[in-house]
Image (cartoon, rainbow, N blue to C red; front, top):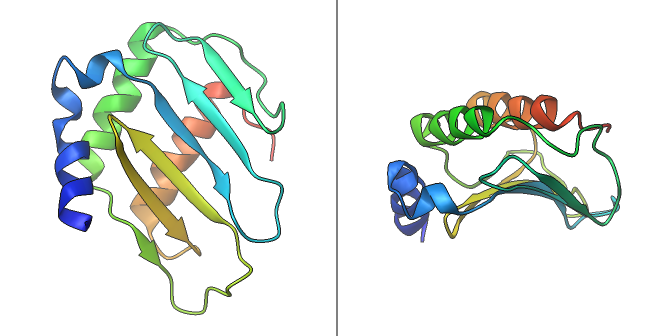
Length: 123
């Protein structure tokens, strides 16, 4: 499964993936789940909670974020010490979803922070 996710994320440079949304959010655990979707044209949509300060970002910024995700080679992981009731963060591009429970993946956290900053996410 991890290989399939890695392959899907590695394909982020393809034109088909360039026409899909970047989706990230929080799921599970004891936090209110939410989802933020960044469309290829830069429009920002939220579900579960209106936590974003921006409704639109430049399409060039969407491409930069997509490239950053591709170059990060993210993989799903549950960190040592992560409790069962801890929420997970996820990033989805082109059908591949990467999930992190805990805070042990600096690369994932950097990409997440850049996505959050791009849309003006209020946590």
